[in-house]
Image (cartoon, rainbow, N blue to C red):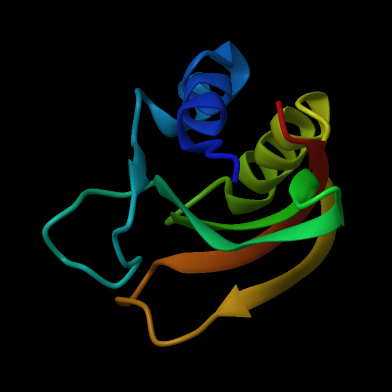
Length: 122
């Protein structure tokens, strides 16, 4: 089983275009966009699934890993979402879905983007 949280967090935080759009490092793991204790804009990421997709000789060779990234902002939402997609593609993820987030505080818009990767287990 592979754990990619550190790789994803580092890639997102080290992207100067993204951090400039955010006004700093507002990237979190395991928060809700509707949580009023954190400022906006922000990015929240979490692993959704991590399953073996190729196994042989009683050993897992490849894993299929799915991450969900939520982007919440009062402005520049599309620019931030585009930057997140660019960063995730640069680390070999593929975007496979995106949807709006509803029920956020007034003036805040949100988008959830799901990414998948098939990665060799080392």
